Amino acid sequence: MKMMSKTDVACADCPIRHNAVCAQCESDELEVLERIKSYTTAESGETLFRATDRMTHFCSVVEGAATMSRTLPDGRRQMVGLLLPGDFIGRPGRTDYPFDIEAISRVTLCRFERARFERLIADTPRVSARLLQMTLDELDAARDWAVVLGRLTAREKVASFLVSLARRMAHLNGGGARPGAKVIIDLPLSRDEMADHLGLTIETTSRQISALKRDGLIVTDGARRIEIPDFDALVDEAGDDEDGGTLA
Amino acid sequence: MKMMSKTDVACADCPIRHNAVCAQCESDELEVLERIKSYTTAESGETLFRATDRMTHFCSVVEGAATMSRTLPDGRRQMVGLLLPGDFIGRPGRTDYPFDIEAISRVTLCRFERARFERLIADTPRVSARLLQMTLDELDAARDWAVVLGRLTAREKVASFLVSLARRMAHLNGGGARPGAKVIIDLPLSRDEMADHLGLTIETTSRQISALKRDGLIVTDGARRIEIPDFDALVDEAGDDEDGGTLA
DNA sequence: CGATGCATTGATAGAGGTCAACTGTAGTGG
DNA sequence: CCACTACAGTTGACCTCTATCAATGCATCG
Image (cartoon, rainbow over all chains, first blue to last red; front, side):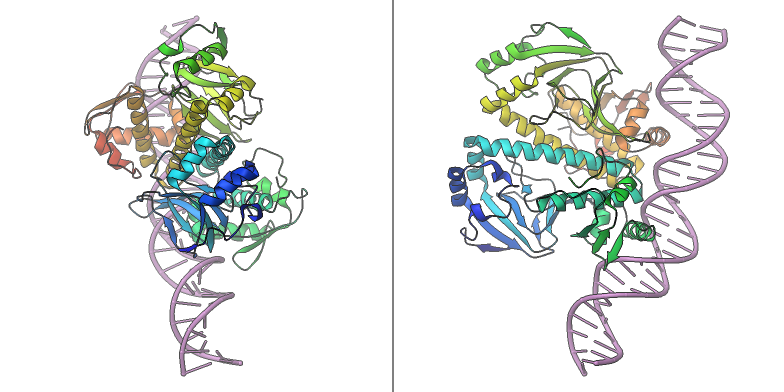
């Protein structure tokens, strides 16, 4: 990991200004953040944190992607989170964190030293309120994912993943999209990583992608670019899903 | 659901005084809670909330148990949480809640009207801090459960469930226990509900319980009482599990 | 005491895992 | 520029674990 000067990017110009913990901050609060933040980058494949480590900093993903996962003693691995820009890493109030975090692309992180940030939470209701909101959202997402892992078929799991990824991407690009619209996703994950996320093997994941392709639900361009000609049709394959199916 | 007078139990005498959202409150803050709370009871089997409803109140489980689950259009069901005394129900900042909540025993709830409680959160750092802490704990638990659902075998799932239930029970009874000690659990769930929690069928769940019994890892007394002669041995069957295996 | 509902057990089938071969693509170096 | 390697992804054959379907056991309750 390479450290950078804390003045790399001004909070006001930050790409995650309106998605991250700082989203609800006013300019005077941003000044405080500005003083205590620092940037770090990591290359794809680098381990950012190990479940056994002590966490000395909190941070937000600014650019790139990372995974949060647990590996069992015998090597089985389950991903429990895909971290994209805006996502927060850390548990205020605890120094440990029971999952491994790994960069899966070149990642930029905005870091806050533990004690300082905890003081900030205590003193800044707009930060603590936002953090609660984000944590509640993550909790919902984790529970939604439990439904996927526990009850969906392999085909539904893959479709669900593509749907939720498309939604997150659309959300990050700050916009909805029309129902039935064509959607293009660039997968941040290898087949291996997708499998670990979905609780499947690489082979099954690959087969299901091929099957969706055969059925015309997706079109691929290389292993990582996936086009969804009819988003609603893919949503129907996902089996779960609360709402109607537009890109939220 | 039957309403009761708000003075049924004084906060100071409440069984979940030190586990619930109010855990960190001082006596003057308890007085505020005392004024805005009300009690409700529900019988086993009653639906407390439907995913499509609007949530008008937040509440804490005082006594009894409830489940949080989602049922897919075709009937498949996945439980995403087992609610025991102290657990909080609701998402401050949202009026919807994407899961069904159902009593699985006679349940007593301590309720707060939505707007009043949200004001309380905004005004009472000790409540909002505690809520954040509880939400972070639930998030960890949800992610741990994702590992169980995604990667463990049926046998490991059942063992994991018994282990985590024993730990929660021990925690509620306010105490640890010695490693290797004999443990007795009274299951709050039917086989059907266990299966929905574990992402299995009733039959597989039942078979795995029989297998654990055959292997001497558990002893049963009726369908719902389970004795664990050697807790550590059962922990070993669970496959996952971070720490050594004492009842935390 | 039969009825009703939950739990257990058995027989069979199917979804996904495992092992293995093959394909395609991106690099690398002659 | 074209082999040659390396590795990710795909596909195939087979097997295992869990689901499914069905029957039986075991309580509680009118």
